[in-house]
Image (cartoon, rainbow, N blue to C red; front, side):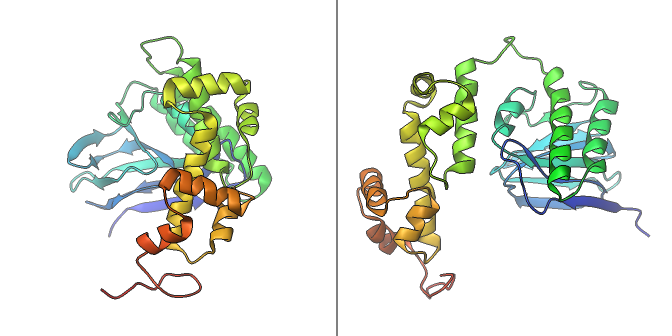
Length: 291
């Protein structure tokens, strides 16, 4: 009889924009238990309590063991698998929010090396951090705040033991990261560049210079480009009207949306849909055309 187990908690609604826990739990895996290949829409940190396994990104395979900690990045396809002889047991916390990317950039996790080896951070601190998040779990607003507080403390441990080549990250880059994450979370609302600058905590002109330095565009251009990118997805994947899509991606004026769309794509939203959609049907628009 298998002695594997899984205790997990998935948050029903993410109530906080800055940082929210998506899920938290513990699992002792069956031999060769595998997740993926697949992608997450959030960050997820796993700490290995015992056993070992493999973590794979594309053709790259990383062998991990007791005491190692690895991370899944949102939008990055991965696969991880427990060993046959000594399948791993781990705890995890999944999270997302406008602060998430900046925090992770100030840890030793990177997309090139998405793990921290055993001994770099005291095992006890990581285990205690995960346990505190799990202990305050719940779907009330109070629980969401408590879980986020515990998550900040958990992530602060990784920041504390971060070995950076420079004492602090370039402030302008951190401003840009925070602005990017705010835009990606709030683009569907009629937010302005002033709103972004207020959130980041700097002046509009300072934000502009930071974006020009690192993104080669202005904050306004980045916001418009991101909204148009999401609009393209909705035009291809849904039967929402052009007007509804405009509102869905943060444009309150349909004519302004069409003008901005044409400026970026050199084609109207309607013609873009006709050119790129690959389905027909009504309602959800999920019926596929027969080839």
